[in-house]
Length: 563
RNA sequence: GCGCCAGUAGCUCAGUUGGAUAGAGCAACGGACUUCUAAUCCGUAGGUCGCAGGUUCGAAUCCUGCCUGGCGUACCA
Image (cartoon, rainbow, N blue to C red; front, side, top):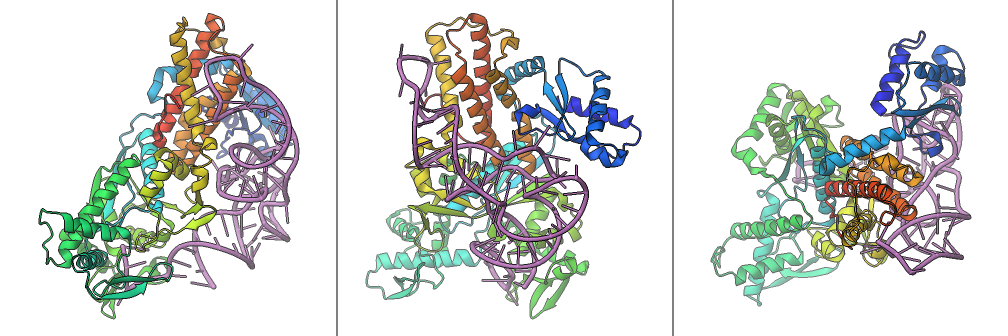
Protein backbone atom coordinates (compact mmCIF):
# COMPACT_ATOMS: atom_id res chain seq x y z
CA UNK A 1 0.00 0.00 0.00
CA UNK A 2 2.65 2.44 1.04
CA UNK A 3 4.88 1.63 -1.91
CA UNK A 4 1.94 1.67 -4.29
CA UNK A 5 0.74 5.07 -3.10
CA UNK A 6 4.20 6.59 -3.18
CA UNK A 7 4.62 5.49 -6.78
CA UNK A 8 1.25 6.90 -7.77
CA UNK A 9 1.86 10.15 -5.92
CA UNK A 10 5.25 10.81 -7.38
CA UNK A 11 4.15 9.86 -10.87
CA UNK A 12 1.51 12.54 -10.61
CA UNK A 13 4.05 15.08 -9.41
CA UNK A 14 6.51 14.33 -12.20
CA UNK A 15 3.91 15.41 -14.76
CA UNK A 16 3.00 18.52 -12.83
CA UNK A 17 4.65 21.66 -14.20
CA UNK A 18 6.12 23.84 -11.51
CA UNK A 19 6.96 21.01 -9.14
CA UNK A 20 10.73 20.93 -8.59
CA UNK A 21 12.44 17.92 -10.16
CA UNK A 22 13.98 16.86 -6.86
CA UNK A 23 10.73 17.02 -4.92
CA UNK A 24 9.70 13.65 -3.51
CA UNK A 25 6.36 13.17 -1.79
CA UNK A 26 6.38 11.21 1.46
CA UNK A 27 3.77 9.37 3.45
CA UNK A 28 3.33 9.38 7.19
CA UNK A 29 1.11 7.53 9.62
CA UNK A 30 -1.32 10.00 11.20
CA UNK A 31 -1.56 9.59 14.96
CA UNK A 32 -5.23 10.41 14.85
CA UNK A 33 -7.25 7.55 13.26
CA UNK A 34 -9.77 10.09 11.94
CA UNK A 35 -7.01 11.17 9.58
CA UNK A 36 -6.92 7.86 7.81
CA UNK A 37 -4.24 5.21 7.54
CA UNK A 38 -1.65 7.16 5.62
CA UNK A 39 -1.31 10.84 4.85
CA UNK A 40 0.86 13.14 2.83
CA UNK A 41 1.72 16.76 3.46
CA UNK A 42 3.03 17.20 -0.08
CA UNK A 43 0.54 19.96 -0.85
CA UNK A 44 1.75 22.01 2.13
CA UNK A 45 5.32 21.63 1.05
CA UNK A 46 4.53 22.56 -2.55
CA UNK A 47 2.67 25.74 -1.62
CA UNK A 48 5.75 27.89 -1.85
CA UNK A 49 6.94 26.45 -5.17
CA UNK A 50 3.55 26.65 -6.84
CA UNK A 51 2.55 29.93 -5.19
CA UNK A 52 -0.92 28.63 -4.46
CA UNK A 53 -2.76 27.80 -1.30
CA UNK A 54 -1.99 24.35 0.13
CA UNK A 55 -5.67 23.51 0.24
CA UNK A 56 -6.02 24.34 -3.44
CA UNK A 57 -3.03 22.22 -4.39
CA UNK A 58 -4.32 19.35 -2.28
CA UNK A 59 -7.66 19.42 -4.10
CA UNK A 60 -5.98 19.27 -7.47
CA UNK A 61 -3.53 16.60 -6.35
CA UNK A 62 -6.44 14.50 -5.16
CA UNK A 63 -8.22 14.94 -8.53
CA UNK A 64 -5.11 13.94 -10.44
CA UNK A 65 -4.63 10.89 -8.26
CA UNK A 66 -8.21 9.73 -8.69
CA UNK A 67 -7.91 10.24 -12.43
CA UNK A 68 -5.07 7.74 -12.76
CA UNK A 69 -7.21 5.90 -11.41
CA UNK A 70 -6.27 4.44 -8.06
CA UNK A 71 -6.93 0.76 -7.53
CA UNK A 72 -10.09 0.57 -5.40
CA UNK A 73 -9.07 -2.81 -4.03
CA UNK A 74 -6.13 -1.09 -2.36
CA UNK A 75 -7.25 2.46 -1.56
CA UNK A 76 -10.79 3.07 -0.38
CA UNK A 77 -10.76 6.79 0.14
CA UNK A 78 -8.72 9.90 -0.57
CA UNK A 79 -9.66 12.99 1.39
CA UNK A 80 -8.34 16.49 1.72
CA UNK A 81 -8.33 17.72 5.30
CA UNK A 82 -6.88 20.28 7.64
CA UNK A 83 -4.53 22.83 6.19
CA UNK A 84 -3.96 20.76 3.06
CA UNK A 85 -3.24 17.19 4.10
CA UNK A 86 -4.37 14.33 1.91
CA UNK A 87 -5.55 11.32 3.88
CA UNK A 88 -5.72 7.83 2.46
CA UNK A 89 -7.64 4.88 3.77
CA UNK A 90 -6.91 1.20 3.17
CA UNK A 91 -9.55 -0.87 1.42
CA UNK A 92 -10.73 -3.71 3.65
CA UNK A 93 -10.14 -6.10 0.75
CA UNK A 94 -6.50 -5.09 0.75
CA UNK A 95 -6.20 -5.74 4.49
CA UNK A 96 -7.80 -9.16 4.14
CA UNK A 97 -5.43 -10.16 1.36
CA UNK A 98 -2.46 -9.03 3.47
CA UNK A 99 -3.77 -11.01 6.43
CA UNK A 100 -3.89 -14.12 4.28
CA UNK A 101 -0.26 -13.56 3.35
CA UNK A 102 0.63 -13.12 7.01
CA UNK A 103 -0.91 -16.49 7.84
CA UNK A 104 0.89 -18.09 4.93
CA UNK A 105 4.25 -16.70 6.06
CA UNK A 106 3.69 -17.87 9.63
CA UNK A 107 6.84 -17.93 11.72
CA UNK A 108 8.65 -16.14 8.90
CA UNK A 109 6.26 -13.20 8.85
CA UNK A 110 8.36 -10.08 9.43
CA UNK A 111 11.54 -11.75 8.27
CA UNK A 112 13.10 -10.25 5.16
CA UNK A 113 14.82 -12.24 2.44
CA UNK A 114 18.53 -12.85 2.90
CA UNK A 115 20.32 -10.24 0.83
CA UNK A 116 23.76 -11.79 1.05
CA UNK A 117 25.32 -9.12 3.26
CA UNK A 118 27.17 -9.96 6.43
CA UNK A 119 27.35 -8.18 9.76
CA UNK A 120 29.40 -8.63 12.89
CA UNK A 121 28.05 -7.42 16.22
CA UNK A 122 30.63 -7.04 18.95
CA UNK A 123 29.15 -6.90 22.40
CA UNK A 124 29.62 -7.70 26.08
CA UNK A 125 33.41 -7.82 25.60
CA UNK A 126 34.03 -7.75 29.35
CA UNK A 127 37.51 -8.75 30.40
CA UNK A 128 37.54 -11.83 32.64
CA UNK A 129 38.25 -10.00 35.88
CA UNK A 130 34.91 -10.48 37.58
CA UNK A 131 31.25 -11.42 37.20
CA UNK A 132 29.14 -9.52 34.71
CA UNK A 133 27.50 -6.42 36.10
CA UNK A 134 24.04 -5.11 35.43
CA UNK A 135 25.61 -2.68 32.97
CA UNK A 136 27.04 -5.61 31.02
CA UNK A 137 23.50 -6.99 31.06
CA UNK A 138 22.18 -4.02 29.15
CA UNK A 139 25.05 -4.41 26.72
CA UNK A 140 24.43 -8.14 26.26
CA UNK A 141 20.70 -7.83 25.73
CA UNK A 142 21.03 -4.87 23.37
CA UNK A 143 23.74 -6.56 21.34
CA UNK A 144 21.93 -9.86 21.10
CA UNK A 145 18.66 -8.23 20.11
CA UNK A 146 20.27 -5.94 17.56
CA UNK A 147 21.91 -9.06 16.12
CA UNK A 148 18.47 -10.70 15.94
CA UNK A 149 17.02 -7.63 14.25
CA UNK A 150 19.79 -7.64 11.67
CA UNK A 151 19.17 -11.32 10.98
CA UNK A 152 15.50 -10.61 10.48
CA UNK A 153 16.34 -7.89 8.00
CA UNK A 154 18.46 -10.25 5.92
CA UNK A 155 22.00 -10.08 7.28
CA UNK A 156 24.12 -13.11 8.06
CA UNK A 157 25.26 -12.13 11.54
CA UNK A 158 28.31 -13.05 13.63
CA UNK A 159 28.17 -12.37 17.36
CA UNK A 160 31.61 -11.70 18.70
CA UNK A 161 33.04 -11.22 22.18
CA UNK A 162 36.34 -9.29 22.32
CA UNK A 163 38.46 -9.71 25.39
CA UNK A 164 41.92 -9.32 26.76
CA UNK A 165 43.50 -11.76 29.17
CA UNK A 166 46.90 -10.10 29.21
CA UNK A 167 48.19 -6.95 30.79
CA UNK A 168 47.87 -5.08 34.00
CA UNK A 169 44.28 -5.98 34.87
CA UNK A 170 44.98 -9.69 34.78
CA UNK A 171 48.19 -9.25 36.77
CA UNK A 172 46.26 -7.47 39.49
CA UNK A 173 43.61 -10.19 39.36
CA UNK A 174 46.22 -12.91 39.87
CA UNK A 175 47.82 -11.02 42.72
CA UNK A 176 44.45 -10.46 44.36
CA UNK A 177 43.54 -14.14 44.21
CA UNK A 178 46.97 -15.25 45.35
CA UNK A 179 46.83 -12.93 48.35
CA UNK A 180 43.41 -14.25 49.33
CA UNK A 181 44.63 -17.80 48.83
CA UNK A 182 47.65 -17.20 51.03
CA UNK A 183 45.32 -15.75 53.64
CA UNK A 184 43.24 -18.94 53.61
CA UNK A 185 46.26 -21.20 53.83
CA UNK A 186 47.95 -19.19 56.50
CA UNK A 187 45.55 -17.42 58.90
CA UNK A 188 48.55 -15.87 60.65
CA UNK A 189 49.41 -13.87 57.54
CA UNK A 190 50.12 -10.22 58.32
CA UNK A 191 47.18 -8.05 57.29
CA UNK A 192 46.77 -4.43 56.29
CA UNK A 193 43.84 -2.12 55.94
CA UNK A 194 42.89 -0.43 52.68
CA UNK A 195 39.99 1.72 51.59
CA UNK A 196 36.83 -0.02 50.42
CA UNK A 197 34.20 1.13 47.93
CA UNK A 198 32.44 3.49 50.34
CA UNK A 199 35.70 4.65 51.85
CA UNK A 200 35.30 2.11 54.61
CA UNK A 201 38.33 0.13 55.81
CA UNK A 202 38.82 -3.40 54.44
CA UNK A 203 41.24 -5.97 55.87
CA UNK A 204 43.46 -7.59 53.27
CA UNK A 205 46.73 -9.52 53.35
CA UNK A 206 49.92 -7.47 53.13
CA UNK A 207 50.61 -8.80 49.64
CA UNK A 208 47.21 -7.68 48.34
CA UNK A 209 47.65 -5.04 45.60
CA UNK A 210 46.42 -1.57 46.46
CA UNK A 211 44.20 -1.48 43.38
CA UNK A 212 43.21 -5.12 43.82
CA UNK A 213 39.79 -6.68 43.34
CA UNK A 214 37.89 -6.61 46.59
CA UNK A 215 34.88 -8.61 45.44
CA UNK A 216 33.72 -11.61 47.42
CA UNK A 217 34.15 -13.75 44.29
CA UNK A 218 37.94 -13.41 44.66
CA UNK A 219 37.78 -15.20 47.99
CA UNK A 220 35.47 -17.82 46.44
CA UNK A 221 37.96 -18.50 43.69
CA UNK A 222 40.78 -18.72 46.23
CA UNK A 223 38.91 -21.30 48.27
CA UNK A 224 38.05 -23.22 45.16
CA UNK A 225 41.72 -23.38 44.30
CA UNK A 226 42.41 -24.62 47.75
CA UNK A 227 39.75 -27.33 47.45
CA UNK A 228 40.77 -28.42 43.97
CA UNK A 229 42.71 -31.63 43.84
CA UNK A 230 43.85 -31.52 40.24
CA UNK A 231 47.01 -29.65 41.05
CA UNK A 232 46.38 -27.13 38.30
CA UNK A 233 47.61 -24.46 40.66
CA UNK A 234 50.73 -25.41 42.55
CA UNK A 235 50.69 -24.64 46.24
CA UNK A 236 53.56 -22.24 45.78
CA UNK A 237 52.52 -21.05 42.35
CA UNK A 238 53.22 -17.58 41.12
CA UNK A 239 50.58 -14.95 40.59
CA UNK A 240 50.38 -15.90 36.93
CA UNK A 241 49.10 -19.40 37.58
CA UNK A 242 46.52 -17.92 39.94
CA UNK A 243 45.46 -15.47 37.30
CA UNK A 244 45.09 -18.28 34.77
CA UNK A 245 42.91 -20.27 37.12
CA UNK A 246 40.85 -17.20 37.98
CA UNK A 247 40.40 -16.29 34.33
CA UNK A 248 39.14 -19.74 33.47
CA UNK A 249 36.81 -19.73 36.43
CA UNK A 250 35.45 -16.26 35.71
CA UNK A 251 35.00 -16.94 32.02
CA UNK A 252 32.94 -19.98 32.85
CA UNK A 253 30.74 -17.94 35.11
CA UNK A 254 30.37 -15.21 32.48
CA UNK A 255 29.38 -17.79 29.89
CA UNK A 256 26.86 -19.28 32.27
CA UNK A 257 25.34 -15.88 32.96
CA UNK A 258 25.07 -15.13 29.25
CA UNK A 259 23.41 -18.49 28.69
CA UNK A 260 20.85 -17.60 31.33
CA UNK A 261 20.08 -14.45 29.36
CA UNK A 262 19.73 -16.47 26.17
CA UNK A 263 22.86 -14.94 24.68
CA UNK A 264 25.09 -17.12 22.57
CA UNK A 265 28.35 -15.91 21.04
CA UNK A 266 29.66 -17.22 17.72
CA UNK A 267 33.26 -16.19 18.19
CA UNK A 268 35.61 -14.98 20.89
CA UNK A 269 38.40 -12.69 19.82
CA UNK A 270 41.42 -12.42 22.04
CA UNK A 271 43.22 -9.09 21.94
CA UNK A 272 46.45 -11.01 22.48
CA UNK A 273 46.26 -12.43 18.96
CA UNK A 274 46.77 -8.91 17.62
CA UNK A 275 50.16 -8.88 19.31
CA UNK A 276 51.02 -12.44 18.26
CA UNK A 277 50.24 -11.63 14.64
CA UNK A 278 52.08 -8.31 14.80
CA UNK A 279 48.97 -6.51 13.51
CA UNK A 280 49.31 -3.95 16.25
CA UNK A 281 52.78 -2.90 15.11
CA UNK A 282 51.78 -2.95 11.48
CA UNK A 283 49.17 -0.32 12.29
CA UNK A 284 51.81 1.89 13.92
CA UNK A 285 54.18 1.54 11.00
CA UNK A 286 51.56 2.23 8.38
CA UNK A 287 50.34 5.30 10.28
CA UNK A 288 53.95 6.43 10.64
CA UNK A 289 54.53 6.02 6.91
CA UNK A 290 51.47 8.19 6.30
CA UNK A 291 52.89 10.87 8.58
CA UNK A 292 50.39 10.62 11.40
CA UNK A 293 52.84 9.38 14.02
CA UNK A 294 55.59 11.07 16.02
CA UNK A 295 57.66 10.18 19.07
CA UNK A 296 57.69 12.35 22.16
CA UNK A 297 58.79 11.72 25.75
CA UNK A 298 59.46 8.11 24.87
CA UNK A 299 55.88 7.51 23.77
CA UNK A 300 54.38 7.05 20.31
CA UNK A 301 51.77 9.69 19.47
CA UNK A 302 48.95 9.75 16.95
CA UNK A 303 48.27 13.14 15.34
CA UNK A 304 44.61 13.20 16.21
CA UNK A 305 44.67 17.00 16.28
CA UNK A 306 45.22 16.98 12.52
CA UNK A 307 42.17 14.79 12.06
CA UNK A 308 39.62 16.90 13.87
CA UNK A 309 40.51 15.79 17.36
CA UNK A 310 41.17 18.10 20.24
CA UNK A 311 44.58 16.73 21.02
CA UNK A 312 47.08 14.10 19.95
CA UNK A 313 46.72 10.67 21.51
CA UNK A 314 49.28 8.20 22.80
CA UNK A 315 49.28 4.86 21.01
CA UNK A 316 52.30 3.33 22.74
CA UNK A 317 53.32 4.31 26.25
CA UNK A 318 56.89 5.08 27.13
CA UNK A 319 56.92 1.67 28.83
CA UNK A 320 56.55 0.11 25.38
CA UNK A 321 53.03 -1.05 26.19
CA UNK A 322 50.27 0.05 23.80
CA UNK A 323 47.28 1.97 25.13
CA UNK A 324 43.85 0.44 24.54
CA UNK A 325 43.50 2.56 21.37
CA UNK A 326 46.09 0.72 19.35
CA UNK A 327 44.68 -2.80 19.63
CA UNK A 328 41.21 -1.30 19.11
CA UNK A 329 42.34 0.11 15.78
CA UNK A 330 43.98 -3.17 14.80
CA UNK A 331 40.91 -5.12 15.90
CA UNK A 332 38.54 -3.04 13.80
CA UNK A 333 40.90 -3.25 10.84
CA UNK A 334 40.78 -7.00 11.28
CA UNK A 335 36.98 -7.01 11.32
CA UNK A 336 36.85 -4.95 8.13
CA UNK A 337 39.48 -7.18 6.53
CA UNK A 338 37.32 -10.17 7.33
CA UNK A 339 34.94 -8.70 4.78
CA UNK A 340 31.92 -7.79 6.88
CA UNK A 341 29.58 -5.33 5.23
CA UNK A 342 28.48 -3.99 8.58
CA UNK A 343 30.49 -3.78 11.80
CA UNK A 344 28.44 -2.97 14.89
CA UNK A 345 29.94 -2.13 18.29
CA UNK A 346 27.88 -1.97 21.46
CA UNK A 347 29.57 0.37 23.94
CA UNK A 348 28.66 1.85 27.27
CA UNK A 349 28.64 5.64 27.58
CA UNK A 350 31.98 5.51 29.37
CA UNK A 351 33.61 4.45 26.09
CA UNK A 352 32.21 7.35 24.16
CA UNK A 353 35.60 9.00 23.79
CA UNK A 354 37.41 5.96 22.44
CA UNK A 355 35.89 5.37 19.06
CA UNK A 356 36.48 8.72 17.28
CA UNK A 357 40.22 8.01 17.46
CA UNK A 358 39.71 4.51 16.13
CA UNK A 359 37.55 5.71 13.26
CA UNK A 360 39.98 8.50 12.38
CA UNK A 361 42.91 6.09 12.27
CA UNK A 362 41.03 3.56 10.17
CA UNK A 363 39.97 6.33 7.86
CA UNK A 364 43.52 7.44 7.07
CA UNK A 365 44.53 3.80 6.71
CA UNK A 366 42.09 3.63 3.82
CA UNK A 367 39.26 1.65 5.41
CA UNK A 368 35.64 2.39 4.70
CA UNK A 369 34.55 3.53 8.15
CA UNK A 370 30.98 4.05 7.00
CA UNK A 371 30.59 0.31 7.56
CA UNK A 372 31.13 0.80 11.28
CA UNK A 373 28.17 1.62 13.49
CA UNK A 374 28.77 2.37 17.15
CA UNK A 375 25.80 1.95 19.44
CA UNK A 376 26.27 3.84 22.68
CA UNK A 377 23.97 3.06 25.55
CA UNK A 378 23.64 5.11 28.72
CA UNK A 379 24.16 3.85 32.21
CA UNK A 380 21.88 1.70 34.29
CA UNK A 381 20.86 2.73 37.76
CA UNK A 382 19.55 -0.10 39.88
CA UNK A 383 17.02 1.02 42.45
CA UNK A 384 16.01 -0.89 45.53
CA UNK A 385 13.48 0.77 47.80
CA UNK A 386 14.11 3.97 45.91
CA UNK A 387 17.82 3.88 46.65
CA UNK A 388 20.53 3.35 44.04
CA UNK A 389 22.46 0.09 44.35
CA UNK A 390 26.23 0.27 43.82
CA UNK A 391 27.63 -1.66 40.90
CA UNK A 392 31.34 -1.96 40.33
CA UNK A 393 33.46 -4.92 39.35
CA UNK A 394 36.51 -3.94 41.27
CA UNK A 395 34.84 -3.10 44.52
CA UNK A 396 33.17 -5.42 46.90
CA UNK A 397 29.62 -4.20 47.32
CA UNK A 398 27.80 -4.72 44.05
CA UNK A 399 24.80 -6.30 42.50
CA UNK A 400 25.82 -8.72 39.75
CA UNK A 401 23.85 -9.59 36.64
CA UNK A 402 23.37 -13.05 38.13
CA UNK A 403 21.80 -11.55 41.24
CA UNK A 404 19.45 -9.60 39.03
CA UNK A 405 18.48 -12.72 37.07
CA UNK A 406 17.86 -14.53 40.35
CA UNK A 407 15.57 -11.77 41.48
CA UNK A 408 13.51 -10.97 38.43
CA UNK A 409 14.14 -13.71 35.86
CA UNK A 410 15.41 -13.62 32.30
CA UNK A 411 12.28 -12.36 30.52
CA UNK A 412 11.79 -9.40 32.82
CA UNK A 413 15.50 -8.58 32.70
CA UNK A 414 15.55 -8.59 28.91
CA UNK A 415 12.35 -6.62 28.67
CA UNK A 416 13.46 -3.88 31.07
CA UNK A 417 16.71 -3.47 29.15
CA UNK A 418 14.93 -3.41 25.79
CA UNK A 419 11.95 -1.21 26.48
CA UNK A 420 14.02 1.96 26.82
CA UNK A 421 15.91 3.77 24.11
CA UNK A 422 19.65 2.95 24.31
CA UNK A 423 20.60 6.57 24.73
CA UNK A 424 18.29 7.10 27.62
CA UNK A 425 19.43 6.54 31.17
CA UNK A 426 17.83 3.43 32.55
CA UNK A 427 16.36 3.27 35.99
CA UNK A 428 15.84 -0.37 36.80
CA UNK A 429 13.46 -0.41 39.72
CA UNK A 430 13.78 -3.80 41.37
CA UNK A 431 10.62 -3.28 43.37
CA UNK A 432 8.64 -2.60 40.22
CA UNK A 433 10.22 -5.57 38.48
CA UNK A 434 9.44 -8.00 41.28
CA UNK A 435 6.87 -6.95 43.86
CA UNK A 436 4.60 -5.25 41.36
CA UNK A 437 5.08 -8.06 38.91
CA UNK A 438 1.32 -8.44 38.55
CA UNK A 439 1.30 -5.16 36.68
CA UNK A 440 4.58 -5.75 34.95
CA UNK A 441 4.41 -4.49 31.36
CA UNK A 442 6.45 -7.42 30.06
CA UNK A 443 3.40 -9.60 30.64
CA UNK A 444 1.22 -7.70 28.20
CA UNK A 445 2.38 -9.38 25.02
CA UNK A 446 3.07 -12.64 26.83
CA UNK A 447 -0.38 -12.74 28.34
CA UNK A 448 -2.06 -12.01 25.03
CA UNK A 449 -0.08 -14.85 23.49
CA UNK A 450 -1.02 -17.26 26.26
CA UNK A 451 -4.63 -16.22 26.01
CA UNK A 452 -4.75 -17.04 22.30
CA UNK A 453 -3.15 -20.41 22.93
CA UNK A 454 -5.80 -21.02 25.55
CA UNK A 455 -8.58 -20.17 23.12
CA UNK A 456 -7.16 -22.53 20.54
CA UNK A 457 -6.96 -25.28 23.13
CA UNK A 458 -10.50 -24.60 24.28
CA UNK A 459 -11.76 -24.71 20.70
CA UNK A 460 -10.14 -28.07 20.23
CA UNK A 461 -11.66 -29.39 23.45
CA UNK A 462 -15.20 -28.42 22.59
CA UNK A 463 -14.63 -29.64 19.05
CA UNK A 464 -15.43 -26.43 17.22
CA UNK A 465 -15.63 -27.03 13.49
CA UNK A 466 -13.44 -24.38 11.91
CA UNK A 467 -12.92 -23.78 8.25
CA UNK A 468 -9.27 -22.84 7.86
CA UNK A 469 -9.98 -21.65 4.33
CA UNK A 470 -12.69 -19.30 5.49
CA UNK A 471 -12.91 -16.14 3.42
CA UNK A 472 -11.52 -13.45 5.70
CA UNK A 473 -13.52 -10.64 4.12
CA UNK A 474 -16.18 -11.31 6.72
CA UNK A 475 -13.94 -9.52 9.22
CA UNK A 476 -15.37 -6.02 9.27
CA UNK A 477 -15.82 -5.13 12.93
CA UNK A 478 -13.98 -2.00 13.97
CA UNK A 479 -11.83 -3.94 16.44
CA UNK A 480 -11.05 -6.59 13.84
CA UNK A 481 -9.92 -4.05 11.27
CA UNK A 482 -7.84 -2.19 13.84
CA UNK A 483 -6.15 -5.43 14.90
CA UNK A 484 -5.38 -6.43 11.32
CA UNK A 485 -3.82 -3.04 10.65
CA UNK A 486 -1.70 -3.40 13.75
CA UNK A 487 -0.53 -6.91 12.85
CA UNK A 488 0.52 -5.91 9.36
CA UNK A 489 3.00 -3.39 10.74
CA UNK A 490 5.42 -6.01 12.06
CA UNK A 491 7.78 -6.11 9.04
CA UNK A 492 8.14 -2.34 8.87
CA UNK A 493 8.61 -2.06 12.63
CA UNK A 494 11.38 -4.65 12.54
CA UNK A 495 12.98 -2.79 9.65
CA UNK A 496 12.79 0.53 11.49
CA UNK A 497 14.12 -0.92 14.73
CA UNK A 498 17.00 -2.61 12.88
CA UNK A 499 17.89 0.47 10.82
CA UNK A 500 17.94 2.63 13.94
CA UNK A 501 19.57 -0.06 16.13
CA UNK A 502 16.75 0.59 18.59
CA UNK A 503 14.99 -2.53 19.84
CA UNK A 504 12.62 -0.50 22.00
CA UNK A 505 10.64 0.35 18.89
CA UNK A 506 9.73 -3.31 18.59
CA UNK A 507 9.02 -3.71 22.30
CA UNK A 508 6.60 -0.80 22.19
CA UNK A 509 4.93 -2.16 19.09
CA UNK A 510 4.28 -5.55 20.67
CA UNK A 511 2.51 -3.85 23.54
CA UNK A 512 0.31 -2.05 20.99
CA UNK A 513 -0.50 -5.36 19.32
CA UNK A 514 -1.44 -6.85 22.68
CA UNK A 515 -3.72 -3.91 23.38
CA UNK A 516 -5.35 -4.18 19.94
CA UNK A 517 -5.91 -7.87 20.49
CA UNK A 518 -7.38 -7.41 23.94
CA UNK A 519 -9.80 -4.85 22.57
CA UNK A 520 -10.80 -7.28 19.83
CA UNK A 521 -11.12 -10.00 22.44
CA UNK A 522 -13.34 -7.79 24.55
CA UNK A 523 -15.80 -7.02 21.78
CA UNK A 524 -15.68 -10.06 19.51
CA UNK A 525 -16.30 -13.63 20.58
CA UNK A 526 -14.48 -16.31 18.68
CA UNK A 527 -16.00 -19.56 19.89
CA UNK A 528 -19.77 -19.76 19.77
CA UNK A 529 -20.48 -17.49 16.83
CA UNK A 530 -21.69 -18.94 13.57
CA UNK A 531 -19.20 -21.03 11.67
CA UNK A 532 -18.06 -18.41 9.14
CA UNK A 533 -17.41 -15.64 11.59
CA UNK A 534 -15.97 -18.02 14.14
CA UNK A 535 -13.53 -19.45 11.59
CA UNK A 536 -12.42 -16.07 10.36
CA UNK A 537 -11.87 -14.78 13.87
CA UNK A 538 -9.87 -17.85 14.76
CA UNK A 539 -7.64 -17.11 11.77
CA UNK A 540 -7.22 -13.58 13.06
CA UNK A 541 -6.32 -14.86 16.52
CA UNK A 542 -3.75 -17.21 15.03
CA UNK A 543 -2.29 -14.34 13.04
CA UNK A 544 -2.01 -12.34 16.26
CA UNK A 545 -0.29 -15.19 18.04
CA UNK A 546 2.13 -15.42 15.12
CA UNK A 547 3.01 -11.74 15.29
CA UNK A 548 3.48 -11.83 19.05
CA UNK A 549 5.58 -14.99 18.92
CA UNK A 550 7.76 -13.67 16.11
CA UNK A 551 8.26 -10.32 17.78
CA UNK A 552 9.02 -11.81 21.17
CA UNK A 553 11.52 -14.20 19.63
CA UNK A 554 13.38 -11.24 18.14
CA UNK A 555 13.51 -9.71 21.60
CA UNK A 556 14.66 -13.02 23.03
CA UNK A 557 11.66 -13.17 25.34
CA UNK A 558 9.60 -16.32 25.74
CA UNK A 559 6.09 -16.62 24.33
CA UNK A 560 4.40 -18.87 26.89
CA UNK A 561 1.38 -21.03 26.01
CA UNK A 562 -0.05 -20.53 29.45
CA UNK A 563 0.53 -18.17 32.35
C1' G B 1 36.62 24.90 29.87
C1' C B 2 35.42 21.36 25.79
C1' G B 3 32.65 16.86 23.81
C1' C B 4 28.52 13.21 23.96
C1' C B 5 23.65 11.82 26.12
C1' A B 6 19.45 13.38 28.65
C1' G B 7 15.60 17.21 30.70
C1' U B 8 7.98 15.77 28.07
C1' A B 9 1.80 14.06 33.26
C1' G B 10 3.07 12.87 40.57
C1' C B 11 6.98 8.59 38.95
C1' U B 12 9.46 5.75 34.78
C1' C B 13 9.58 6.81 29.78
C1' A B 14 7.70 6.91 24.22
C1' G B 15 7.09 10.52 20.42
C1' U B 16 12.44 14.30 17.66
C1' U B 17 14.39 12.60 8.64
C1' G B 18 9.44 19.66 11.17
C1' G B 19 2.86 18.37 10.46
C1' A B 20 -3.41 18.01 12.21
C1' U B 21 -6.14 17.65 19.27
C1' A B 22 1.71 15.67 22.58
C1' G B 23 1.01 9.50 24.13
C1' A B 24 1.83 4.77 27.19
C1' G B 25 2.81 2.16 31.77
C1' C B 26 2.75 2.84 37.01
C1' A B 27 0.45 5.77 40.90
C1' A B 28 -4.82 8.36 41.89
C1' C B 29 -10.20 8.30 41.34
C1' G B 30 -14.95 5.78 39.30
C1' G B 31 -16.86 1.45 36.92
C1' A B 32 -16.81 -3.97 34.60
C1' C B 33 -15.71 -11.10 36.10
C1' U B 34 -22.77 -16.91 35.75
C1' U B 35 -18.62 -15.63 29.38
C1' C B 36 -12.68 -17.98 24.88
C1' U B 37 -7.44 -16.51 31.03
C1' A B 38 -9.67 -9.97 35.39
C1' A B 39 -1.63 -10.83 34.89
C1' U B 40 -7.48 -7.80 31.62
C1' C B 41 -10.79 -3.95 29.97
C1' C B 42 -13.74 0.88 29.98
C1' G B 43 -14.02 5.80 31.98
C1' U B 44 -12.10 10.34 34.83
C1' A B 45 -8.26 13.44 36.27
C1' G B 46 -3.36 14.87 35.38
C1' G B 47 1.20 19.10 30.69
C1' U B 48 4.58 26.76 30.62
C1' C B 49 7.35 19.45 26.16
C1' G B 50 14.06 22.76 31.27
C1' C B 51 14.35 28.52 30.15
C1' A B 52 14.81 32.53 26.39
C1' G B 53 15.19 33.99 21.51
C1' G B 54 15.21 32.62 16.16
C1' U B 55 13.92 30.01 11.37
C1' U B 56 8.25 29.19 8.64
C1' C B 57 2.23 28.09 6.46
C1' G B 58 3.44 24.95 10.89
C1' A B 59 8.46 23.53 16.22
C1' A B 60 8.53 18.71 21.72
C1' U B 61 11.30 17.98 16.95
C1' C B 62 15.73 22.43 13.34
C1' C B 63 19.39 26.88 14.77
C1' U B 64 21.67 30.12 18.78
C1' G B 65 22.38 31.24 23.92
C1' C B 66 21.57 29.80 28.93
C1' C B 67 20.17 26.36 33.27
C1' U B 68 20.19 21.28 35.45
C1' G B 69 21.75 15.97 35.67
C1' G B 70 24.83 11.71 33.79
C1' C B 71 29.24 10.13 31.19
C1' G B 72 33.77 11.38 29.10
C1' U B 73 37.79 14.78 28.33
C1' A B 74 44.86 9.42 30.86
C1' C B 75 51.34 7.35 28.77
C1' C B 76 43.38 3.22 32.71
C1' A B 77 40.08 -0.04 29.63
